[in-house]
Length: 251
View 1 (cartoon, one colour):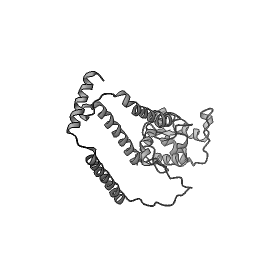
View 2 (cartoon, rainbow, N blue to C red):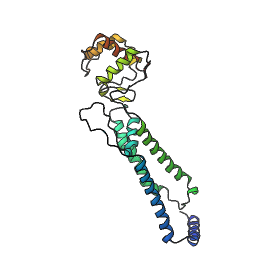
View 3 (tube, rainbow, N blue to C red):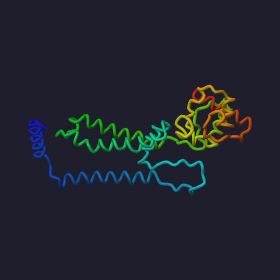
View 4 (cartoon, one colour):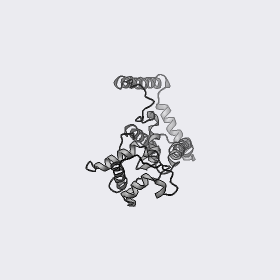
């Protein structure tokens, strides 16, 4: 802060002090009004959005998709933003790097912005940063609260209703827990199996897909995928149809 800024600040402060009002009762009165208004909103929301008792927890269910509390939804969305890129990036980026960068910026901001000006219209950059941060957190929280997560019944890609074989193959793919090792788009795990999002673009053919399902190590040496030998011929064909369409017909 240079000499001119100091003098301007002192003049503005003296003028504000001369025209101002004492802390008691004016500031206390305003605080009381704001606190009363906030409490009224909380009570109204508690009456309007009642908390309901849900069904008893079933520890044996395979359909339940765990979701975090609302104040972690923005981190939940960050995990999905970085999902399926590699085995460690979602965890590192969403739970360590980005939150700590934002926290560090929050701690350092008073040291970076040391100007004496406190009037809002005189600090456009700080206001923009604050508004952008709040908007980002609000948007990510909204997405986390409204986006439906995948479960046993959630399709991994969009398949036309006319492609009955592919729809059946996609259902078999989910029911046999293939998403525990493979990723398809934003669904599934980043490993240990390969990402199958664009499997169809490799044009291996349905016969290759069926043979690979029956004996993976014969078609991919060193593969850790177990053989799937309990399907009928029709089911093998359905799975192969689904896999051959990934990335081309089905996205």
